[in-house]
Length: 452
Ligand code: NDP
Image 1 (cartoon, rainbow, N blue to C red):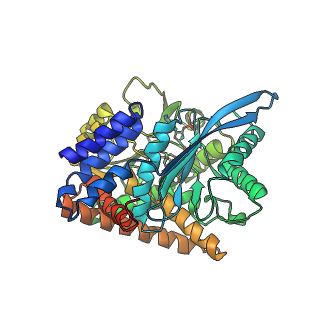
Image 2: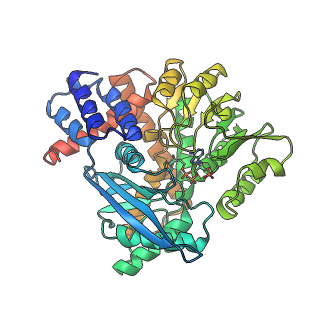
Image 3: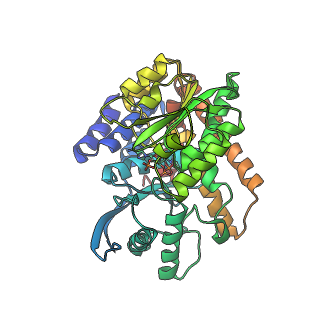
């Protein structure tokens, strides 16, 4: 890195020495930006870069709630408002025991550039809580969401900050959060996205991240005369993004052989067909069960429990393409080496930052096409942006219209990141392409607005 970029990174290390995930996200971003910063016409780009790595605002609060036994519980709530350069803060809420400030900041940072790539007028933010919805009753989740929103409502608004879902926050939680916002503010507005279809939601929003991931990956493949048809795919996770990634892969004729959750993975040599996918959706979204039950239900399926100290077995299965859709850093060095050894040709990042920095370097230097999360999973927030537009106009578009808008947005993202890669870095380096294309646009807006 050149001395000024390095100085910015050292500043982050000094200010936030314990925020490993945030440091990782900033580092990868700076590595790309470093390739062009000295060629930009204006030294002010250095100055805004320094400001980009500092959130505009961080809100942390306590969330007191009562469990079903009548005992008092406490969790910590967060909202990181990273950048409003391009529009109101926009980004999901994550409820997971691992949530801390570092994870919130890394997600908010990534979100700024991802939202920029969609071309829609959205800034970036992220929030959540270390609350674990797993094993909680619906009423406990409801009481938690109501308490969480009782504080959050004073910081958000349809023109200020518009949260959505993420890990642990799906349709059920968005409903409870929206209801509480409405009670306190006495306003029925598009303050959250991912709402139910009957009360302000958009068609295709639940499907958008998974569908978008496959649309973008397909565009990359098509450009290289490659195809999804008849190819074997690995998918990790079994939540929202994983489910709709599998659905769209099936639509395009691919065969999916794996899924996972935080307890383990399944390998189904025969492929996960539509009927099996339907079973997973009920298992995960309604019964809130474990992926292990899939292996108990269907013949010829292998279940491997998760062992965090070993390489992830999912990435050691021979396949053509891989779609990590669970969580950050799920592909580490050894996993990347396994993928390369098994001849993987494309990795499409459905999750945010699923590859460690080392893993990314191994994959790209081995010629694996890597569709980075900022671009590849932008479909979710893109349709959230479309939900905001529909809410402002008080209309609801058809499924076909939203799907075709989503496809267009993902194709445009591919065009932008591949052109930026060719212009500023090397062909096919979509990590650089995504970082550089979005950096220039956010920086220009910040400079125009007085370096804020
Ligand atoms: P869900 O909560 O619906 O699903 C998450 C899945 O990942 C579950 O199967 C979960 O297992 C698994 N998982 C979570 N943490 C771990 C872990 N530490 N180790 C192994 N498996 C884990 O979340 P989403 O599908 O919405 O999100 C998945 C990823 O996609 C996240 O990185 C998120 O930030 C990203 N993303 C999501 C978007 C969206 O629109 N929802 C938009 C853009 C990005 P279990 O069932 O055991 O909890």
